[in-house]
Image (cartoon, rainbow, N blue to C red; front, side):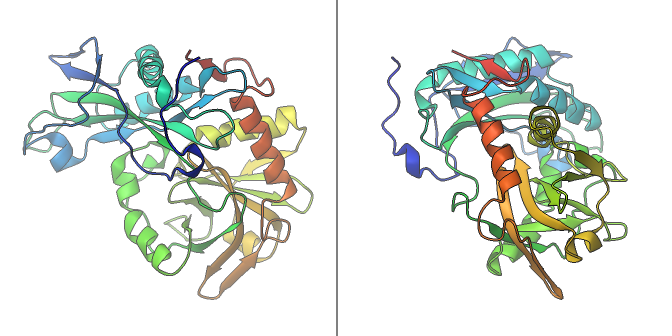
Length: 346
């Protein structure tokens, strides 16, 4: 049996820790090189590198798990490969081939198998593929060289407190990302959320809820996760955007399938007015994403806004609890999920 690193797995935070290997590949002269594992976790850039001037960068996030049978697996890495391909195209970057993306994930996770937390610890190995412009460029145009990397690091829960419901607030600032680019994972999109994120934390809130920037009428997402609601009829309500500005979370899409096809729930994906939230139309709320899985929201507070979700005010409500357990049981190998969802590494 593989010997794991000597870490306090049950008390890990969500922060970076160097592991043994990263993966790196370079795009130069119109092609990606063969790629390799590396023990060098540093990046050296020209002061004129495209990432520093025109923010040509995108990234992904997924996790590796140890199942109850002792296997190391990842969850739907092909979906991350596709989304990163789409992000790169939107940012005029050379997409890293999707099949090579999945193979690179397998290679770097296998090389760091001792860093994958043991089953039942509550921790996971976070896998962060990223791509950025390294070529020198001073005029406003795409760079001519890029680097694709994958780093991995063991992490604990994204939100501390386990199943305890969090309180969020309404973002007072819009994320000034280009129209329609909420559907990609780029550093620029997240950088725009840092100021309101810090403001929220200063005021004791765990997250910001963003409304649509055009009218501030419809629910979009939070700074780091998608939003889901449960109405009084027990239906799962999933916000959609008129402007394609909500990130297509792989976790959210998986939960929709779990709810509809495995749990027999009615799932409604549609634009959601914030007035429905304040009017008390929903009894549960959750934030979902790779890092959060599903974190229960008990309250939304802002000036003139005080919303409590009655079935999940203190801990996860029954629907969010069942959704989370079903998804994590699939990921850990305790129950069988749809074909192809669980990718065995070693």
